[in-house]
Every structure is written in C-alpha cells, then in structure tokens.
Length: 285
Image (tube, rainbow, N blue to C red; front, side):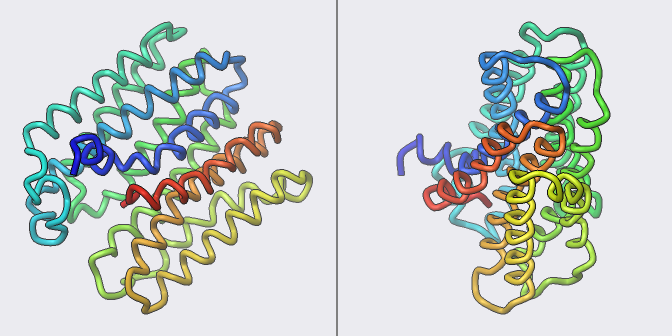
C-alpha cells in the first residue's frame, strides 16, 4: 500500500465534502459577503482541521485498534504512531494559520483555537467517555462559527441556530458510531436527536421547492440509517454511520435553504451523493 493511500485512509478524506458544506453554511448564514477565494481558503483550512483530527484519532486509538481493528494503518505497521502524531498536530497548526490569514478580527482565531483544542480533547478522551458525542458535535459547531467569524464581525442568530441543529444531529450520529463494535444497538433514544434539523427545517420545506426536496432527502437518509441500525444484517452499523455522515451535507443544505439561499442549498446538497461516492474508495469510518 502506498504512503499516499495510507494518508488518505488515516484522514478519512471521503468525508471532506461534509466539511466543505459546513463551511458553506457558516459563511452563508453569517449574512456577510464572501468571495469565492475566501470561501475556498476557509474550506481548505477546515479540511486541514478535519484530516488532522482523524490522524490524531488513529494515533490515540492505536491500542484499541490493535485489538478491534488490526487492519488500521498503525496496528498493521504501515505507519508509525510518531509520524501520525506529528502530521496530525502539524495539520491543526496549519489550519489555524490559514484561518487567521486576513481574518477580519480575532474572533475567528479564537474559534479556530477552540476547535483545535476540542479536537485534541475528543481524540484523547472519547473512548468510554459519556460526553464523547457532545465533544464531537462541538467540533462541528465550531466549524460553523469559525467559518462565519472569518467573514463577519459577529455571530448572527441563523449561524448559532444552524450550528445547534447540526450539534444535535452529530450527537445522535456519534452515538450510533460508538455502537459499531457491539452486537446490537443499546438504546434508541439518542437517535431522536437526528430529527432536530428536520423539525427546525420544516417551515422552510413547506414554502420552498429546494428546501422541500432537501428535507425529504434528509428524512429518507435518517429513516434508512435507523432501519439499518435496528436490523440484524452484518455490517449494518458501518453502512448506517456512513449514510448519516453523508447526511451532514443535507443538514447544512436545509439550514442554508432556511436562510433564504436556495441556490447555495442545492450546491450543499450535492455533498451527500459526493460523500457516499467517495466512501466507496476510502472508508468514512
């Protein structure tokens, strides 16, 4: 296996479209005008955070992976833990620098530093941690705020509300992901948090074609994933989690549509099929 492919696996790069749509939502809901160049820079910066966080996730989890997932790059001996740690921290640092470049004020830098810190805390302390899902969700919340503050002077209400909807969805998703090594789903109630973006997006869906289509797509994705989780077929957990991860882009698209930008919402919705397609080449979990 080539070093490049190893790095792609470590970074779970198939999920990057969901980071890009997070950035698009944060910028769109901020109410500020942003050039394509600025949006691209922010997408790259937050991608560095995501990939760096995934690297550190494998580095911190290497002992557990040796028992449960020996095929992962570090347990299999494909790459050393030291190299992965160095790359992970380096990517986080590069992400902070790129966010700080031409930021309108210090809010974006503070948010970026908080994101980097939360990523490290989650990676180091998510195994057996009952607050792990909330920590993961906080990371995505901070992606929204970092993108918004990089183009605006303050956080507008739509940004905070959209980020909170995504927070709820991520708590439900992360809970499902934590059940991957178990024989059955231990509890269903955390999955109810997956529908929070649907509840918030219902008024927009009732009055807009794009919002309505996105609403139905997200409802179908969540329903199918929950059906898989409740079933007994082999491999149902990874498949359900992969679908829910891709659904992050639909959550973003619904938030953007609710903010009055149906064109951008349609673009964000494309992150869902793109993520699923990329997951066929690089596993998203």
